Image (cartoon, rainbow, N blue to C red):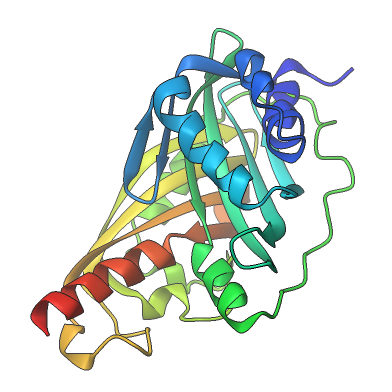
Length: 267
């Protein structure tokens, strides 16, 4: 049998999202479940989170979730994934990747943090050209739950102290088309919203604050240097006291929309 922590994560990805079974949230998520995503807080499972998620399932009635990597820990669970399906509104297939991490309480998911590459989805729907999907993890639910590691946490917190971490060679950006993360923001500071460790792995959510770096083609040069925030969710591997891989997903679409609003207001 798989462990209870993996069962919850599988319940979220498979029983709820891929199966479109809203009833599954009764055992997967606490009624007080909260999701932090794209600078928004969906506070409450039934009143806030479910209506927003149901709207996406309605827009993509055949939506599937392909899981590429998981972290199974006693202090939290996380996964890298791709969502994919055909938009009922546009009749166009698209794929978009992301990272989500969860805190657990009372045998259910209690708080989630996520960032997804909605900018890639928007591009594919507009171009009517669908991106390929990475291979799935061969056994995403079978690992035993690992306890937190103080050594891993120290290494990760030290790594997040580098405002230039988005450009580091160990970073695997979950971003298809459009600007790279370092072209979106010149960071001045990094805040850790949430972090948990499981053995030599970690999952986290970060908020970068700094200035717009000029990466979007349709945003005027006059907005370069504008103060912005950039949200990132990630899964990290640690070995020999250093981060060896960081799979990061960011809210590029949220930043783009914010800059477009400013551009229109100024115009």
